Image (cartoon, rainbow, N blue to C red; front, top):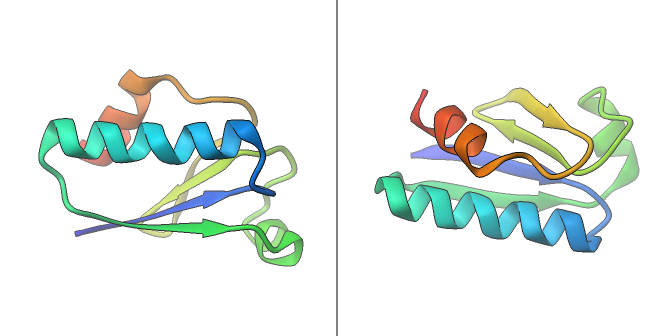
Length: 78
């Protein structure tokens, strides 16, 4: 099971990123544990200055703007 964190305030892009992660994980048949991190201090702890950020298994893979679905799929499959 992959541990996935979406970092952001809960804005529209953050919600879209979380939805995209769920959709790509479902399409690939990958079990995920999805957590939304909205605390600004916790987000800063990951070194993220632009949201949404995406952390998979403890590694920051994306920050700022919506990721592309094909990138999310690649990160989840790694």
